[in-house]
Image (cartoon, rainbow, N blue to C red; front, top):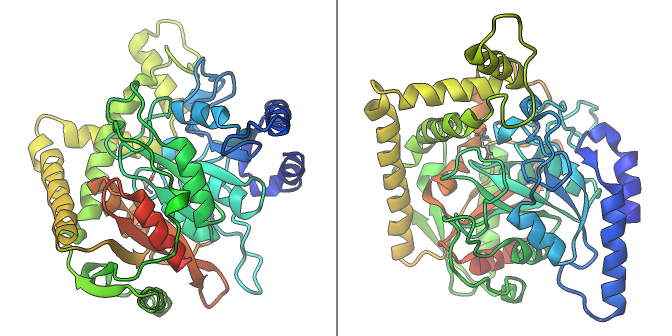
Length: 456
Ligand code: GLN
């Protein structure tokens, strides 16, 4: 814990931690020492973690990297973080992210950009760690903590993990409680571990997972011993390679990474099977209707009354002006864009044309996966991202759709509620990390982790 706290100070330029909690950390670390001395050490005892700012932590600023939550200190602790502290983990502080988890580059944060610890060979250009869990990714990759929590609505754990060369897993929807995590798109949001290895991901997921009566969508299922499942034996397993992920214009190095990964799994005794997920091409448009729709509803609660920021008012301003000014000042551009899209697709005249259609597409995407799993496929192997990390500022001037394209390989997993994991798998021709994604059957995270372990 002490050495992590020192590294966090040394690495301020990464802007990964936005709020440090050294007193809490040292107190928890001392307790962990005592428990270890007494021979009562649970799984996470003394393990220093960073917590994404989307998680509410009691008495500690929790702002979802938004100015509208300025000064907000929750009176409550999220279920996941309270489970972590019960399991003996140590909280180093809160981690930077895209505002309300909307983004793929950590450039929409009120705290400013996060820097990726990696550089292209021979270049000093600062790169994005991806997003929205960019602070978590950067902090784990730079050894500022031993693991971090992330959340993934459309790829926000897997894409940043890929950009910094760490492991990131989105569990099955309902495996972890969403209670006390600031909501973005409630039917897609799921928290998960970001760690240096698959084994660490298995251990951290074990502490985060579990049924929670306070989240009606959390599943009443026992949490298996994920670590015990890591045998590395995937003999006879069927690995699906979906042809729809072979996108036009895919860089040669991504294609090679994918082929090499498949080869490695074949060498380990798995059988490679060409599969089809025919509705893949509709996933991104469906996601960017469903996610903003849910976001516009979830973000209605930031009204200047209940949480955080309230705008200064002028003589004669009524409650409407108070809402308008507070929301105009408090939300950033990307969040406003999502609220506007969401409000539009949910409005009476357009609901059927957009929102209902997107929901139907979502059902078809889910069915695509059900069909291939029914054919006996154990896991699906795809690239995690269409490119390596890009430069800070490189995408922000472009059309926002360019930024949304980063999510093409990850959003299907959220729409279908499945578990997915990004595993480091090589480097591009400029020395930057690249990752592969494995997608598993619902509730079979243990088996999915074992496939990732074989690929690691
Ligand atoms: N990049 C996607 C978005 O902006 C996904 C974000 C996420 O998973 N939280 O919506």
